Image 1 (cartoon, rainbow, N blue to C red):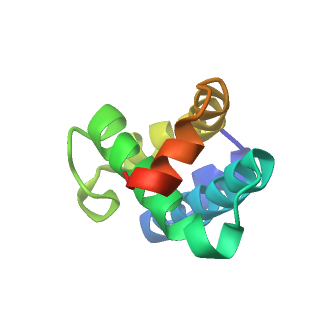
Image 2: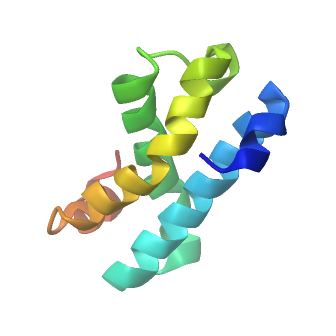
Length: 98
């Protein structure tokens, strides 16, 4: 985790996670050749749903403890990489939702 993330408040860390998830959604859509503006919300929602289920025991970002938020921040690059490795995943999210 970047050192500056350690100095963020919990709320700043939550906002940074949300912002980075939106960026990842845009990057994944662009790489897959889909319209970013039309589909960003779907991919963002799917990513957030995955993170809540996989890393936060179903809790929202707002209800999660600091250590869990730090772990999510650290895992975001791996989440992006994993999504990139699954052929057709972004297309499926665009077509069917999360």
